[in-house]
Image (cartoon, rainbow, N blue to C red; front, top):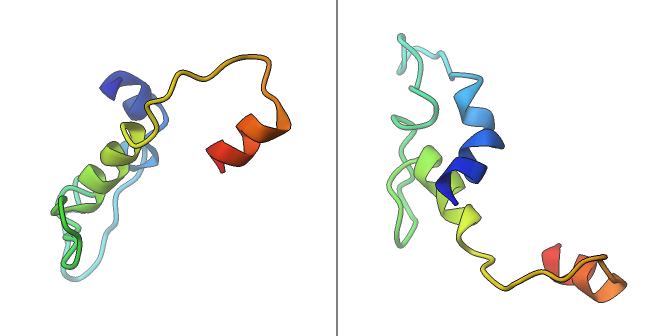
Length: 70
């Protein structure tokens, strides 16, 4: 599951370069999230979204399926 998330992880292809992050933010790992209950950085926040939807998805997609994915 983590591999699927990593393949679609835009933070693997970019880095945020700022005065506070002169060497980049290491793919969101040093971009801290201050007010979230379970994650500490942007990369972890993205990765946690991969596990948020765990129901078995039937194909082909119906209108109801698309609505639940949104």
